[in-house]
Image (cartoon, rainbow, N blue to C red; front, side, top):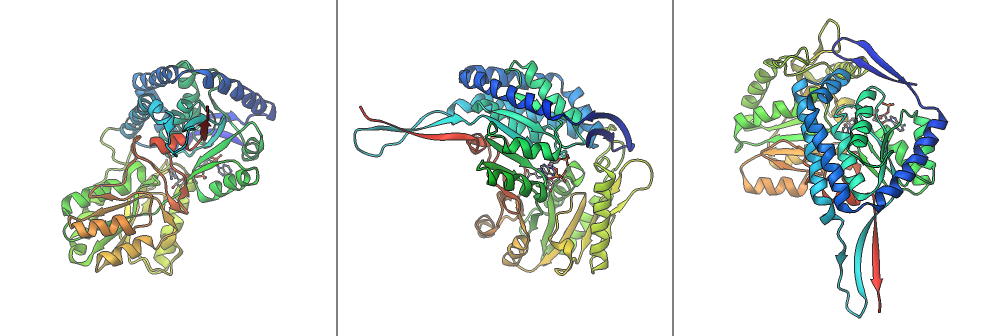
Length: 456
Ligand code: NAP
């Protein structure tokens, strides 16, 4: 297996990297242990200074790094720039807050002993990452991992090798110990071997259910902690009291951000019957004004999809839904010519009997549903194997409370689309995974939360 940079805008191969030999993997593991020993001995101030330097480099080299993202996975350059800026924000958040998150916490239990919790690093962590936010997904691991004193072995998606290399390079230049974050061009079998290696202390994976289940099974066998950030099919509910213009504009962004290739994209749009027709017409006309084209052009809204195989999968899902009774409101078809371009679209009337109804669609295709009450909207929202994010547009306080309490998801955003922020925990329930990234939870996920009791 090779790691290949292939430009989705042209379909042309740009660069190829060979998979590591087993000896190279062994070297990386040994170096990761050495780096951990050094990093563990660093003060929080030293770690914070290095993490701020990571952010400095990201900010200084935003254009170059964004160009690599666009080249390898096709998102628009302007969104790639925003991604790099967000990575810097995430690093600064952990540089500024990790000391407080990791500070000892006294616990009063009565008696004479002094009791408290202390947070200690675990050691090398394997991070298996996807291509869709090829820097953000990695930096949201790197920030908390290195600030906690852990080290990282990054197995990035095989289509974004230069993004993976760039992270290793930036972390090294920022002055972290050699090998604190290593990009490993590992095969799936080598990932399994690393997970089984006693020197590795945990794993985090962002990606598909299939990959998550495989990594978690191995870690289950050898008793290691895992965090899984998997797929989603987020509901986006619009009720009559909502600001409809805002709901439509946000719905379009929520579905088409990153060319629809976002785990927390709104995917199932559920509108109340009183505003359904108006919402549908506005949503349709907004979709029809989206400009698809060269991702390097500042006028472009959507670049190509990531790959031919990804586009084929979406084409297959849409065709299946249509053959099973769904109707096409607009778009949702491939665009002829070089590159993996796809016209964003909307499907209505997807029957529950269709497989597609329960699937995640990882491209710019919205499913639209009509309901007659908030209860029905919540029931439909929960009728999914996934539970990642959710968005609800309503100005009715009672409906807001109903949604927050009853939608089965890791996040509910009211009158806004689901988004991640370094200070907010991020993750899902059901088939969307478990554990949390970001915030204090993300840092403590790979800490030994040690109980200390001192009796004099
Ligand atoms: P994927 O195929 O699971 O790939 C993700 C990563 O897992 C890649 O590095 C991949 O390597 C690796 N991988 C694949 N099979 C593996 C296995 N058996 N053992 C170990 N590693 C394995 O996912 P994708 O289709 O590229 O990405 C899209 C999915 O990720 C969607 O479902 C999306 O919703 C989800 N996602 C979730 C979040 C979240 O935060 N919840 C964020 C972004 C994306 P190769 O590239 O070498 O195959």
